Length: 611
Image (cartoon, rainbow, N blue to C red; front, side):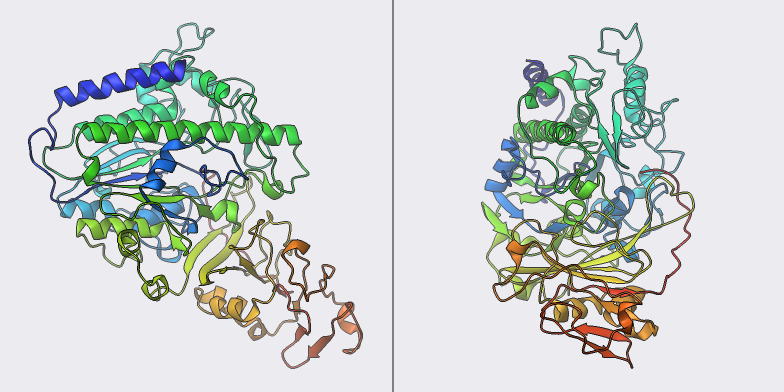
């Protein structure tokens, strides 16, 4: 009932805005260029969008409608699976290794051109609403949101920090300031405003009274509801969505607009309203994959909270699209829905992101608009950076030194996809994060390359010069050792199970990685160290018929003293190459991992403890 009443109020508000505010449609003036709408929920994994019902049976009718009337990309990857780095890549149109901001807790370098500025130069009215993470230092965006806004290329905005820090006192962003004038909706509030109540509930970094910590970056928020009470319209995502509708209604008549709407959800903590909680009550969600650290009951409870946030955002997307339609602008608007990164959601005992595994780096991507193919599904690997290239193409704009590519030919007509994407050797993903102050989360240092080889094989290569992070049950943890891993993301689940027979392709892609990653993972013998080629056991369902299952095996210093002809594994012989210091497994077409005993020193970059 609360959600229904909220929808009625929102519809009345939109109708009033149409009467009071002149629009391009009402004046008879049509924009020469399409409006651009980027809907950007935070921390949203690809298989929780309502299309993979076996993984999560979500009710997302508005996302499905967009996909039915547009193009859905099933293998879309973020440039970097961390909030500020991912958004800096997007703003600058550059991949991680050329991005001006590679850490959380810092401000975007305003001397770097942005796609917002490029659109301004082509006559667009640019709007940013919600969490942008481009001004993430301890000064925040400012109570009026103006800090660095003009320099970044924003004509209008409603800016905020994420749910971890927006409930700061004193208020330091536009959302927090608006909550000062909003009464708390809970019965026991005793006259407090909503900022005060939700600071008690959310706290800073999820340390409030509404949640219990789960693992390093997870939260079970079943202690209390969001303090809006029955005022669903004041819930954080609802409020942000309403501000987006307001700012669209205030665009100059006859001028095209570009809106980047960044919902704070479904980023944790997953604190629900009472109405949202009722929407998932009694529904059973799948437990996490291979999680021995959290009870099944708690896994399902947290996942239900995540689902409720996604379904609420889907409702808000529908209302936003309806408001654009009421303005007479839907037929001239390109709509993109995607995310900055995914969420492990308890898989392999990990909650959060920052990892090279599919739940962290693989995100939804749907593009809909006039003249586009309807219901097309594209399996080719693409980057969310290409959303910016697509917007620039439709706007007739350019961005200096951008690495983004337009997806426009794939949206409008059938093309030779392999020929179209030959200009990019692979889709890159990366993150390097280490430092003395990063005590709350472990350091990571890796690069990923994703490339479609054929209709059934999209290879993902992961290079970790210091050993790959946890979060994949098929990959043993080897801190300080080089690891090169190969996966087929088109294989049956789990997507992050290592792949047999991909050694040549993995080495070829590793050679194209940036500098030290190519050196470490494509030619490990150059280090002059003793390396190990280990044979790892995959889930037997994905093994080929002529393969024998083998035990996980890592050659130790003691094992290296065996005679070369000694049978170390059943059905396999290891041939020692003394010159190169390599142990090569023959007969078994193995999954690939290089491991060096050389313990490379991690970077000592200072970072603020901001997620």
